[in-house]
Image (cartoon, rainbow, N blue to C red; front, side):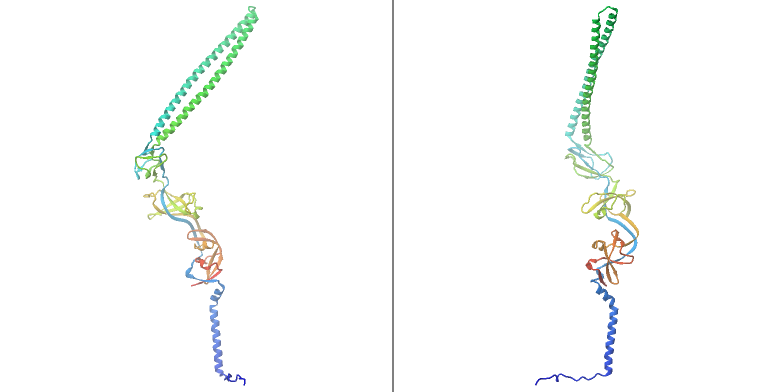
Length: 426
């Protein structure tokens, strides 16, 4: 026989009414509880569903946007340097004899060292002898010029007398001819003699002028040669005077590059002199701020529990190791007890703005290029486009995209991985 399902059938007994009502009540209570729980957790659930990731608040740094002053400055350590610190060099090769020691106080014009240079002394004597010889030649040329001019002048005078005599002879012959005492041929001869004398007189005058020009040029050449030699002697005398090394300023002897009785070459370093009456403070500034530094900007110098006002005196035109050297001059009387290379704190004011919208500076300025920021509201960090203005070491100016009271994530935004919305858990 084919087996049926009668063995699997079971007769169900209907539940009592009170038990069926209990089951419906329990189901209704559970539904209400689930609805309440869903209503209570819906904001957090919706934020979680709409966001792309979740980050702990402990991994972030948050700052509030507020209005207030913004001071842009550059601060750092500086060292005291002499504004005037000349280095003295050897004008000629020779042996140096020192008259001072490092650290000595010196006055302007005081002898610091002397260089013995036999070659320069011999050259000076030789050039002076050449100058004397050229002077003698110039004097001799002047005497010769006077003699030649006297001879030319004598020839001119003789020609003038001959011309006058010929004129007189012509006058006598003319009178005699008119009186019938002489022949016409003699009158013609006298007239020819006047013409010859006139030509001779003219030649004598031209010869004198040519002699004057020639003598003038010759004397000028002799004098110029003598003057040129005098200039050479003067230059060697100057070099000889530079063998005595003198202090160019009132100050203190700094570093000595040579020792006493040492032989040095021409243009070798000898020593430095520090003018302690003109001290400045030099600081290294990052290349990013170098474009904004200008001479005359106000600054502040501090050290040893004191503060002094200063001004930027100069900015180096070159960048070395991503830094630029700037110098500050004390604005007012020079503080006492300052020393070369002494360390001081320096602050330069670049810009001062009042009542601007600012927020604390953070990595978001560099990470997003200063174009976006994450604003934290109700546990969600939302990406927002912004526009930054002036920036200092501590704050940045907000031009667009934020308002006072906004909470901005200034650090740790790399955890967001560029998401538009991120849940921030406590």
